[in-house]
Amino acid sequence: MKTIRLIARLDVKAPNLIKGIHLEGLRKIGDPAQFALKYYEQGIDEIIYMDIVASLYQRNSLGNIVTDTTENVFIPITVGGGIRSLADVEKMMRCGADKVALNTSVVQRPELITEIANRFGSQCMVLSIEAKQSGPGCWEAYVDNGREHTGLEVVEWAKQAVDLGAGEVLVTSVDREGTRKGFDVVLTRAVADAVPVPVIASGGMGATEHLSEVVLEGHANAVAMADILHYGRTGLDEIRASAANDGISVRSI
Amino acid sequence: MSGTAVIVDYGVGNLRSVARAVAACGSEPVLASNAAKIDRAEKIILPGVGAFASCVEALDAHSLKEPVLRAMNDNRPILGICVGMQMLLDKSEEFGEHAGLGRIAGSVVAIPREGVDGVQHKIPHVGWSPLQPSGAGWKGTILEGIEPGSNCYFVHSFSARPERSDVKLAVCDYDGIEICAAVRTGNLYGVQFHPEKSGPVGLRIFNNFLSLPAA
Image 1 (cartoon, rainbow over the protein chains, first blue to last red):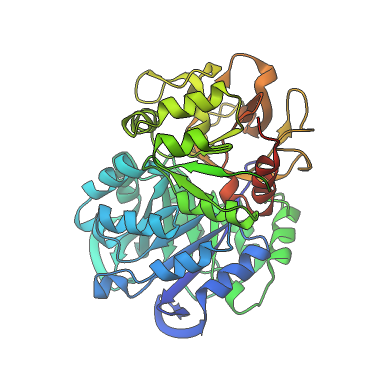
Image 2 (image 1 turned 90 degrees about the horizontal axis):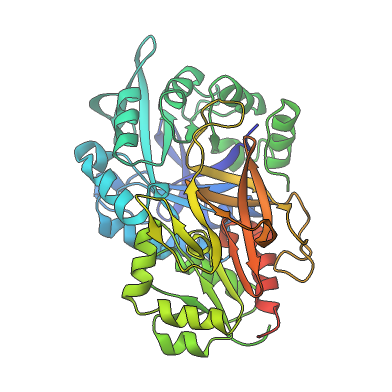
């Protein structure tokens, strides 16, 4: 069994770490770099920073937070939100990001995926999808924190983006996000089984068993967690132990 | 920590993370984008990210290939990371056949799309994999003191296949497929994983490298 990656997802409205429900109704939690450091020390495998207001303002304001974080956090860092050009990607990489996650700008101009993959490598180009269920076994991709329709069917869009050069897919269920009701396992599986690259499940983790479900039944290669960690409801030790108990391989610390 | 370790800056990769890792080991990170700095360096870190051919070309285009080869001739300690490790081999099959630096006999080939069970698996190989010793053991190398089974962070679609098994310092397993995780010949080291992204284990590896006696 492959080792599943446990990822802390930190949604940021600079300068604060925030958390919403269905990507809306944002509450301030604290200093994102401090949270990232805490999770690193507890053995998280990766960090995702998402600037959740960037698309509205057409810019990403995470550069300084990423730079602060990489002072003492030595694990992969993905940055998303408002990244619109090769220059934006380069800026984030220079701040210490390893990967970028793009949604709105690649929906508008899918060729940007290929441009980023050619310049920085596919491993750096993460496709971010905000998915809402539109019918049984059907999901539509959204932009702007689940507010704007794209008309794109999620699985088809994921396949197209991977063909264009995306090296990883972050699938966020807007329906489940912030609800603590568990991941959208069916959605995750539909995407994971359709693309040859790793898939990160995001949105809805409220208990340790949700992780096991989305890995064993949803075929996720990585799991993004937010408020279960931010509010300290469950520790990473407990999450790792529970996963291992269910036969899921996680990094031993 | 003795002497200077320079990080070869030829326009690719996340140099900041490598520099931060060197600094976290108590050494002052120095970026080198010209031959003179590399010629003076006691130890050299050669990062690499992206496609093999574009890394080799960029190294050459920055006139840094020759000084790096000179350092290898002098047996100065060198650490290649990811594509920086792959470049040490004769050639790569990524996007057609391309020549490497030719210091380790063998080639860089695509990771098979299926595990040994015949089931298709995800490419790239992304994530934390446990290192297992190979060859002559880790004593006196950059992996000295690392527990076998310690996890390091990998992200790659191609992997090195050295001809001689004794240059393999560590391997890891990807669905039954052996991945060459680290190579060594003399003071020349390469790691497929990213020590600058592998937490405390990675920092220990940098520390070991920076503590190697000078040539």
